[in-house]
Length: 426
Image (cartoon, rainbow, N blue to C red; front, side, top):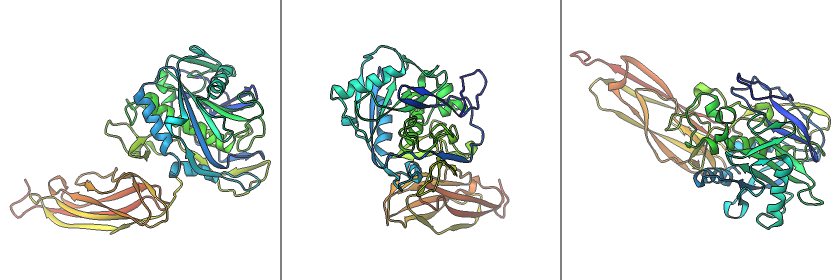
């Protein structure tokens, strides 16, 4: 990994690695453009991963608007069990233990508001003290199976390892042996992205004017939280007994940092911003994560993988797989066809988008599908062909349903023919 600084021009380094008090800490890089193609390998150093369920705790440090907190809380409450987080289950250690697709977070018990207890200029030692104080005062439990996030407000500055928040990083994670004596506590700092949106928010970096939920601070922070959380569960003791990455290669988040998929094909929210994940009816722009498939890795070995935004948790089918709207004339009324999506697997799937890339004369005019679809259930989608919007001749398009199923997307070929009436087209 390479050190990078926030420059006037785009930076292309992948991450920053520096020594922390208890060893090493991996810092989420700052950039203004998409990263170059990621390295194809990740190193396994032999250390443990976080197996079993993972508990997440949040300390909102300083002034965080309640609306921003709600966006973050909603995402953390629903990330477990999704195809997005399921990517982390591809990470195992040499004993065969693996990361589980289970994240526990309840805002009423797992979050705490700290009103600038250590001021507005913080260091890495400050971050550890903030977590330690929250545990000592019983605001949060002491939990070796937890990951503690300190989310700093826009008016808070923080420096660590020769760099600074918004200057060289948007967040980082590290283990600590001093937060709770005798335990290794995993902690992370993530800044409110509204402090430096052109450095730490993926939408603004890529020239959107806002983010999917209209809150650049919370939306940008969520992608960084996902980066740091994923790296923590696959490399929790970085610098002590490292696992995946361990300072030899990039960690899981580093290898796909600022990779959101093919930008031009991403769906857009109602406010025009791009997104690539929908969870609990909310849209998010989340960086992809490096996935591997090694059930029992060998210490000291590099393994190949790839960047992904979803690892399917089920299967789905669509019926019919093609629809022909027949031959229509310019003054004919719109024609509707119904498509049925069925969850054919044994677990709930998450639906990301339906027909996001359709263009005239085809539109999705109705659906009974929500953001999720339970095992064995189905829902319907109404597709409309509007002759008034059709070009003369055959009009073809594809209805694509993007979801967390392993066979996503499910596609329906659409065909409709437009003719001029005997009196001629208008």
